[in-house]
Length: 335
Ligand code: SF4
Image (cartoon, rainbow, N blue to C red; front, side, top):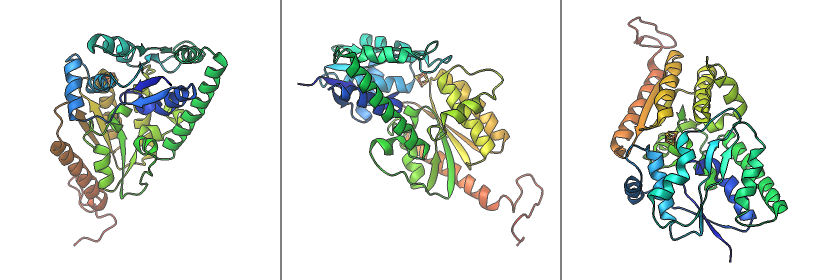
């Protein structure tokens, strides 16, 4: 009988799901993914996790707990660095320990360390370690790794063609039309956990908005744009978000930007501010939505509707009535 491996549907699940799934399935594992976040999981997360933690971390606790009796192992890698000379949020480094100490009676956790800060070749070692729970054959692990990397590349290519992550994972088409183009920024787990973000993406699609996210911009462009910052941003997430914001300011390919920020997130607290300054300076309207356990559907919907109305008025009427007190009359005859 194959070993059941639990994957919590939270945090970097949205970034690496196809990679992890392909790798472990190629080694004969049966993947068990926790269900989508819901109200009772929200409450469970708050119960197990320390109060001061950010919302995504609390949600992760709930997903790990929900796998308690469903899996033989749970995969929670200890991520320190996912790119050379960069670091990831320190919460990811302590994640396996936090989960072990907060949630009783969990199955064993596979907590392989991934630290590519100084040496990219460490990645293969990490896969050998994770794979060793399923086979002793290093050749088999290497071939599973190659398949997984190929799958991950396919996943990235689909994102860069404009597909939203949940649509790729659920094999659905992402609508590509809309009378407004909005950049939606934030950590992937904020963008794609529908319960946590109170269905912001769904709401935008219902409002006939064409969404662009940082994942739809190539890593090469993100890196190039982030280089424009006076100091190197060494947090991978910060670099990605800042690179995307600069890209939007230069390309002017969005009518506005919505930033989904986690309450209690250190990185978001300064990156959201830096992105806002850049975007506003280049004339791109910016809307910040802070997500926490108390965010409500009505409040978020009202903010989004008001923002979209403002963008449509601006697009249709600003050249007619000047917001600066000076009559411009560009493009339309005065009444
Ligand atoms: S980056 Fe922010 S939201 Fe993500 S785990 Fe770290 S503190 Fe939480």
